[in-house]
Image (cartoon, rainbow, N blue to C red; front, side):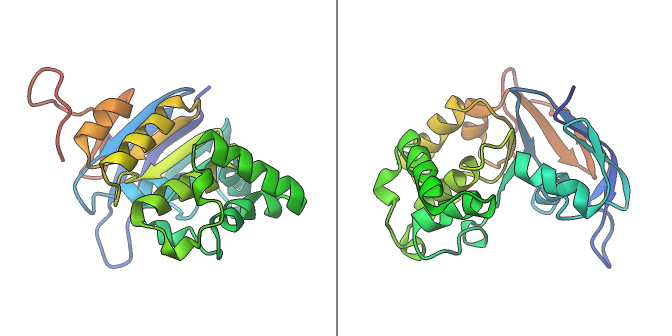
Length: 227
């Protein structure tokens, strides 16, 4: 059974033609699916539809074996599929790193001690304990990116949805992110313009063009198309 199965997805923003038009794809256990496409093609829109932040005008979203149509249907989906936004500042809002990462477990009813224990476990596993007591808004762009990933992983999702995860990362932090993602068991949908990153991460690739997801056409043998 696929973790996600999207069929016939159509979506357009008011006053604009559809960015998604009969978009279809499925995500299976263990896959790391990279989605490419030009700016404005609808890649971020697709991720938001997967977790119910946007509602398609037609088509179906089946997540974890159940068709999801209403807001209440997506509450479970958001617990099981962690979305890391393209802009880390959209996701980080607490004074310190530990408080930001603890927000999810606390929201699920964990005690403060339990939540902080979970936070320290995740930071230790990701080798990010040095950030524990840092003031969030003083982190660099790359450091914020790693913290947003930790804030999602602390919820132990079954699927990771990553929107341009290498944005604002220097070479060292990109290497660390790549190492972390390669070590994780979760299935992933990754939107990325970075061909070198995609080559290291992807087990499968799809290209979003004219509202549809299609198999990419390499320009040469074993090449990852640059978008």
